[in-house]
Length: 515
Ligand code: NAD
Image 1 (spheres, protein in one colour):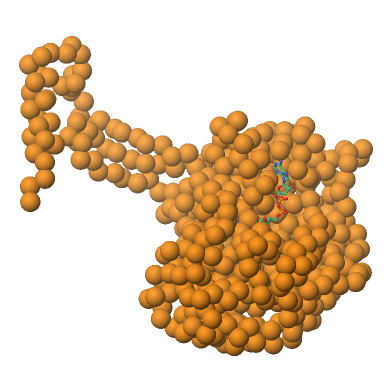
Image 2 (cartoon, protein in one colour):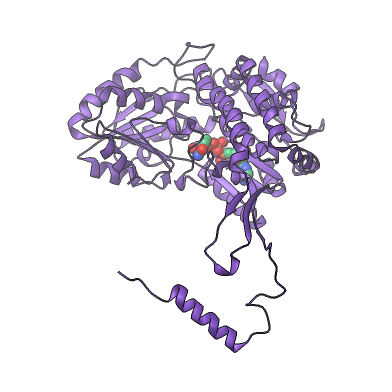
């Protein structure tokens, strides 16, 4: 099996025979498909030393040299797409389409995007100043790779959300230690192997497999930490980064709202809602997790969503087109999904579709449509991260906006209306880092747009210029090309000169506004 091969050929950093191991399970079948080392802090420190030794030569290769490796990796990913999909599917239980649409396509696009744009985003920026004292100086902002980046990832997208963040970090000239989720480490090992085949120098990218302790050890070793995962762990990582005074970028949980206005194209809104709610089994940070529909179209919208959700096929993914909704990847997640649905039903909600965990083997929760829901229910206020779509009737757009913003999270949201100007005006009032109008999830695939959460959904962002500059130290350089022996502000201070400067200030800044 591909995943077991991956483990055997993996590069998890020299685990000794007596070291602890972690078993990796296929969530759709319950079978154990491989084991990886659970690396100790000492082993992580060893990886870090090797990475630091390898980094200067990688940086010295320049953008063109690094881009060549990335473009070879892009081709490698497409050439090996089926092997990578099999590995992703085997450790996540997601469908082949989810692995292809949201992981292979992301990885392939990201290799090309960062190979082409890194140099522009990180080019020296010439700056002009209005400060008279600094006039004539050459002013430059430059970006220098920080050195060693730690990337810690979650289990829901082993390629996109774990490995994906390594690409800009590497293109900036850093070495990287990737700590994938202990639930889904095999994809990272396979991709690291692929990168080496494509000419990435030894030790520039290393995979540190293990659990939370290994993650903590990574934060202790690196110069910057890129973390994707739950808000709870994100706070711990931020605290540890603060102790070390290293920058951290956090992509955390969400409770994304969709607003459907009375003039929306209901067919498109329903198709999008069902896909954005159930793709990847609802285990996407930007999954649609709650829907607010204006009263006049509520019944029609619910009928459409219900009819489409009933037709979804769920089961063990064995190839393209075999199922629409896969398994629940993470064992405790099934309990959370079940508790949210039960809590909603206990408080008066109705499940029009699904509502139950399925019998094993494998771990599945039925695609579930809930109605008669409100904000007293966890299903509407806490991250469910499963195949559930609670739909709530609202009187008007104002109520929808108020409820959408009634959340500690602020990751993404969507608004559906034929009046796109009005929908955009509503988008601007939503407290979310990314808002789609007449779409959902799509913003994530647009690498030119920053993707980052507000409120408890994160700090910083990925993609766009900020998505690579964060892996660099910013240095401001001021060069005095003309350098007289003494400037007017130098010692010794002298009253006549100081009064002249006062007059100059009055002339420059003291005239006030003249209408
Ligand atoms: P998690 O927080 O449990 O684990 C994430 C990673 O952190 C894992 O690799 C884990 O081993 C590691 N870890 C655990 N404790 C740690 C510690 N103290 N220090 C350092 N690392 C530690 O999250 P999860 O359950 O794997 O992922 C699901 C969550 O991720 C959901 O909340 C989802 O919304 C979020 N997510 C967010 C985005 C985004 O872009 N905003 C993307 C994908 C997933």
